[in-house]
Length: 240
Image (cartoon, rainbow, N blue to C red; front, top):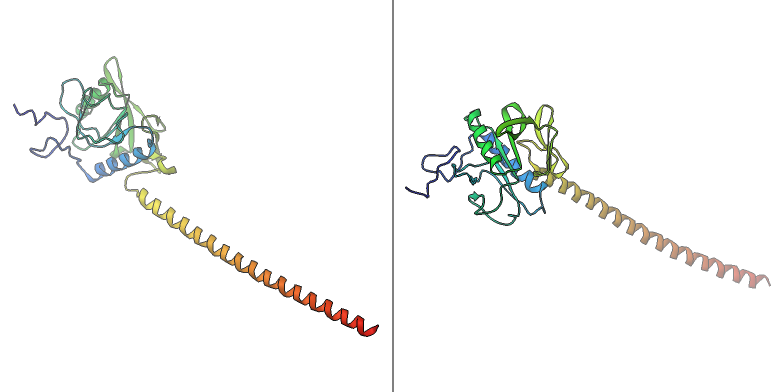
């Protein structure tokens, strides 16, 4: 048997079992937004944030591929497949973004395996419903609880809704949703900062010119006062 071709529990193109497939542009937007946002919100924690990377729980089952994983103590390292035990402890967080092809049976099986592997926080995002749930195990049965308004310690952010749309709050101080361009926000903020700096420099130049003009005026006034004093002295001499 070819051990280089693992059994997998995720969509992939024929013969490309090592490459999990994102099934739509919305799926890709969510994965990109999650990875960027959580990378920001967990900065300095020592965690590696990765998305759509094969993950092998220690139950001997097929490889899975969470849309987002937070791996404790793995910051700065690169992984193409993460195996519990061999590579490190269970992920702190796994997130699944529901795709059109996902059945509830598939979702339950996949998320249940992550929880049984020791993952502390497991979330299911449903883009079509603008909803997010946290998965838990109770007596080995999987259950789902609405996670709107819930702050995730492992992700370092809170799930919320703005105008009926699911958002992540608040990496960079703003609510982020699919299709947003945080780098564009950064550019706009930098442009505003540059413009403010230019205005400040212009004001400083104007103040320096005003100070120079005031110094010239003081010198001229001093010369005039000296001239007046000299004239008054001469008049006094002429009248004596």
